Amino acid sequence: MDPDSGFDGDRTHDDGVDYARNRDADDPLAEFRDRFDVPGEIYLDGNSLGPISDAAEASLDRAVEEWRELGIEGWTEADRPWFWYGESLGEDLAPLVGADPDEVVVANSTTVNIHTLVGTFLEALEDRPPGILVNELDFPTDHYAIRAQLRQRGYDPDEHLHLVESRDGRTIDETAVVDALEAHDIGIVFMPSVLYRSGQLLDVERITAAAHDHGALAGFDLAHSVGVVPHDCSSHGVDFAVWCSYKYLNAGPGSIAGLYVDERHHGKTPALAGWWGHEKETQFELRETFTPADSAGGWQIGTVPVLSAAPLAGALEIVHEAGIDAIREKSLALTSYLISLVDENLTDLGCSVATPREPERRGGHVAITHPEAERVSEALRDRGLVVDFRPPNVIRVCPAPLYTGFEDVWEFAEGLREILVDREYEDIQADSTVS
Ligand SMILES: *Cc1c(COP(=O)(O)O)cnc(C)c1O
Image (cartoon, rainbow, N blue to C red; front, side):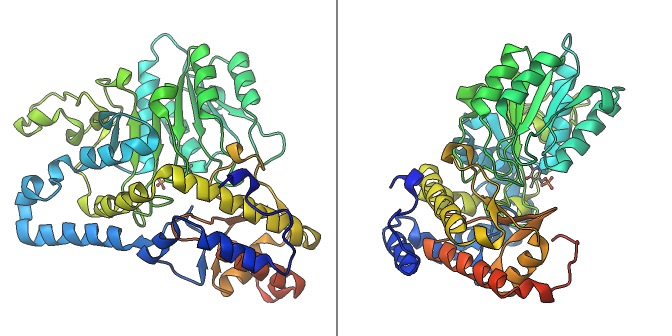
């Protein structure tokens, strides 16, 4: 399957659904959809909250049973002993970010992990200036956390936080990142892998190399790509990364987050230190002084929240069974197909695609713009086509490969066309509380 040619150029409008069904019949991942319970008719919001799978539910149930049967003994006697839960799940996650097992741990939430890692590396910069480079299309929590970390060290965020601007309001040009590195004294570059609104995939390798060329560290927020785009953090020399597990990893609402710290930084003192990041062998000696674990585990803070981590164990089994390369291939085929349907059937109704068309610059979702995007998103949801709206005019559509097929994409595009042709959205009251 060539993801670049995700659709057949000779296809006519009428044989569209047959084309989609044929693609589904040839899909090696098609069987995975039976392992998920998906709300609505077609669930296209897995980049915000992935659905539950049989395996995630089973691993959560196992933790609950172990709590019932083992009580305190669960810390050492559970099937996956809770004492090592963060490290153990980190080991399972490591191949998805391209890291060694001891470079990854699950802990905290994404926002807390940004606090502790950016804080740690601000302290570690020593003779470098504390300039941090981000971009104006970032997910806001990243900036809130970084500004707070600067303030706590006595640096004015307005002076030390530098924003790469977008030329088109949708994408960030990597060349602009390089230009900003030339123009300012930057100690840390912190960028997303995939922009949450437009779905652009940034070139992690190039940004990391450029940061290093300028003596800066490179950190990434992989929230919108882990589980759908393969990563090579170690071989690209990425210094640190964070992500959450409730999007493409399908580990459940508020499930535990993950972090990566390159081996060369192990042993540094975490900005937010806590006993769960202590060297494991001596943690229960409960010493007065803190010795951080010589691994990514050092950035854990308090006791691992077993119940919010447990579903991740099963969720990861599914991702590994499918294989991240097969997931990426199908994801690109689905998003290419969706883009082709928008181009063919929806542009004359006011829609356009805001996601880059080159597969290597695209994450797992497609942003469709429409002047009435908010009310159109509501109308789609009313039909059981679950998408989300992001201000000002974006409908985000995520055909997640583990539980979405080509016919679903076809059905979505047909539903959207009907809503626009019949102006169904005109009956809907605009409501800007975003869920
Ligand atoms: C989803 C997301 C987050 C979420 O952070 P939490 O601490 O889990 O709420 C952070 N950054 C990005 C880029 C995201 O997409």
